[in-house]
Amino acid sequence: MGLAVDRLSWVMLVLVTVIGTLITIYSIGYMQDDARFSRFFAYLSLFCAAMLGLVMANHFVLLYACWELVGLCSYLLISFWFEKPEAARAGRKAFLTTRVGDTGLLIGILALWVTAGQLHLGRLEEIRTFFVLRDQTWWLTIISTLIFLGAVGKSAQIPLHVWLPDAMEGPTPVSALIHAATMVAAGVYLVARTLPLFTPESLRLVLWIGLATHLFAGTVALTMTDIKRVLAYSTISQLGLMMTALGLGAASSAMFHLSTHAFFKALLFMAAGSVIHATHRQDLRELGGLGRHLPWTRALFLIAALSMGGFPLLSGFWSKDAILLSAREHAPWLMWTLLGGAAVTAGYIFRLYLRCFHGSPVASGCGTPHDSPAVMILPMAALGLGAAFAGFAGPGVFHVHGGLDVPMLISSSVALSIGVTLAFAVGLKRRVLVPAVLRPLGTKLYRLAANKYYVDEAYQRWIIGPFLDATAWLSRFDRRIIDGAVDAAGLGGWRIGQWKERFDRVVIDGIVNGIALVTRSIGHVVRRAQTGVIHHYLFWVVAASVMLMLWIRAVSA
Image (cartoon, rainbow, N blue to C red; front, side):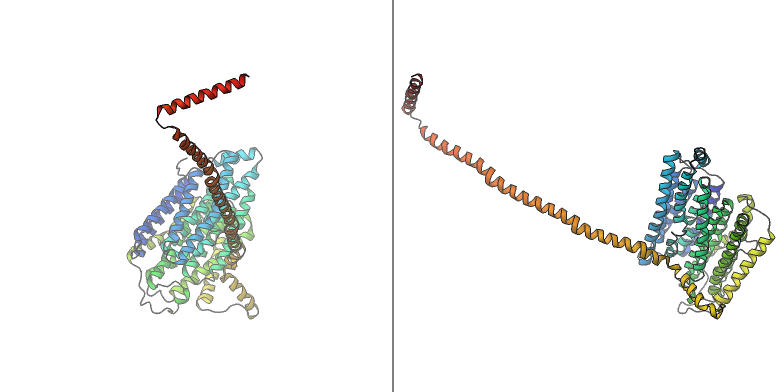
């Protein structure tokens, strides 16, 4: 059990260290007035250290230890402003939700040890061969599904995605760190690292979960009005896209998109933090026209949005097209579905951009906004370079297709154009494009997405509510039955003790004291015979001798 670095972990090491460093520098300006400034950086450093240990671990035990440490640090960072009830609840929700997935991962690791007797990450091909030669690939399906459950929790895939939007209650640098290159990336990295253990059946599960998450979260992001929640659902959607690529077996394309996503998503969160820092608001309904006041933030946000939307030659374009090409080879319908998801992606990210930086100012009472200080802008500018040019590393580092596929270029550009056009017309100009006959249906669908498909409400009603009711019933049962039985046993013991005490005092002590009293009384009688006069003693000797002689004579007769 130790550390090892290969091509996959090397990519993650670069992402975690580079983006983690830039976010740390950005945090100096963002958190400068916070009373717990030092504690924040202690948590941040521990988080990055745990992530580095996770990606360099060459053994499942070490990986799981670092995996849990990442979860602990995320809880500490999400609930950093714990005096806010929302932040405390968000940290608790993230911790408990990811524990569900972590339990699956732990069971998968234990099952792998029991069946194969091997947990070394460098010998996964040998483990696969071990099961194949024994015609026990069903064990691989079970183990890989359990490992994937751990990734579902960490990477916020359906149905364990509910923690990530609420994690926005933490400081914005935490959101950038967790949702860009660290915690949520851990799930994608885990599946890519253990891909040799996956069977066609478990890969099919990864594909469908990833695709459902990609489309589900994208439609929800279209309706959110909180800046950070739009980006949170955007992260869930993009992670779903990476999982879809992994389900296709295209690990290189998935890791390529994870790398480019780390740059433009960290930049988007930091730019959103710059907006919040300048206006002290994060509701889109209270923002607008900030472009003239925040020129640097606006320009960098636009670069990140274009990259995420798949604008040609920017980093997001190369990685997204690599996944689309893999989907085209697998099934044309999947490629067209992902192109629809790309249009949705462009729609929600440009809706966010246009509502923040264009249009008429809405908010009042916050003074004249101004751009962030250099300590915040410079890390954002460095991420902007990555968001623009990191995609050119694809062919050399990730061994994905390096040329331009013209049909795919046209298709993805059309998807981007559709998304931007709808964002401008509906998101900024507030035009209603739905025909009148379909508006009732459109209103219902919008309300459904705006309420996040009522997943949280369903969990509250069918899982959390019954669980709390069961715990309340168990509490009453414990208080009335268990505690009642214990109290009754205690009362019975006390009464038995009282009876034994009386029996001991009256009977046992009475016998002992009675014997002592009789002995003392006899002593008093006998003591009177002890006069100290010698002729009295001679009298008793003579009397005793006479009585003894008479008794002997009577016996002998």
